[in-house]
Image 1: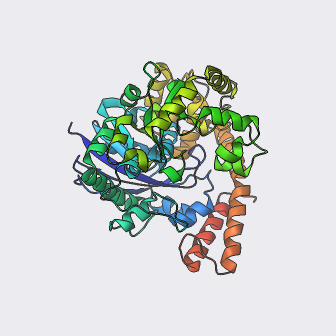
Image 2: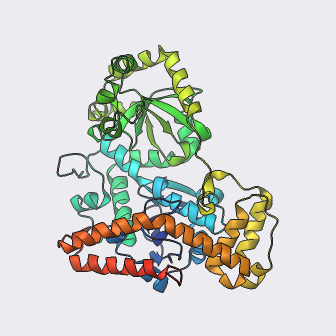
Image 3: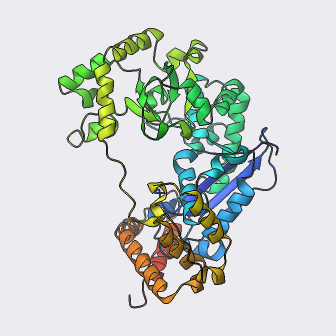
Length: 485
């Protein structure tokens, strides 16, 4: 099939993909020259009756749970739409901070609905790409032709709504998924027009194999790397060096902006966190141990990292733009390689760091293991069955997560398929989940209502709009309680 791009964005009930839910999906397919193919998609997704959204998130998006129930698809319907209409062969699925946010929500949503949570990103010529790090590296190395925003305090920022405003791109309703998608298409087109060589190079590296050819331990070499973990002062960009294999086939890299002799000396005299620590470390020096974060960090091959060979810095004052020199890099690399015991220490720290414990909630247990072929075939059967078939369907799942997940799937989509004991199990689960969410939900809502009594609105909305949203949230909370509430 002909290659195409699909730009998408989500609005969600909160920030945690394990526990929060998609409430709005929007997307636009284009050809590789960014010409629209068909009409944009703009879909509300029903919030199920086991979820309390973050009131702060609702103040930003303006999407109420009631609106999703009135006009939205169920999650099951949405997943079918996404797999059949969006994740078509030869599609590059693109977003803005999508690898760390939107893609994670998609994976967990597909998992809950018995779809493969990974295949949509790589099978049949599909791929994914995150434009946020592309923007960061473009700003750092080839900023010419684009206006770049700053915060009121003078710090560089790459917020999408500020990029569009400065570059005269229409973007009237920031934090509406469809408006953000249309704006992202135009920003991407702008980068392609102004810096086509860098754009094409980074697009060619969107897959983990391409990244692995540049960043690997068999032939380690310094490379240019843009990441949100690095300081805004240097446009989130540095020169890094691979030092050891990380977990899950990733790699640990060292930031060559720093000299290891100086780091070790600062550690010895107790000034490391003050001089080199992250902002969180500096704010909480008594709560952290020194592990050289973020100077040593994990590069994840499958997260579309924005990397480039060192030679890109030799053009257009690249070294000066990111506040480094070749002499400095050579000196710092020499210091790093002179301390093999440091690398052994980092390896030991990684080995001692505990794995994530298994999820308490089966719906959040996506990363607790992979399904075998037997269970994947049964998942296909689940998706193709309706209420009558599922009522008498008792699959011999081998993965211990799936029986409970099936109960939840039936309860949300085909409640008439539940036996009496299953109804009780579902209701017990639903109320327990709501009770876990309630304290934070009620605290956030109380804070918002307190502000409203002082005529202080949220997220640029009017006091009246915020009051309406707050009232709808309280009604939603009350509607989910048991009958004897």
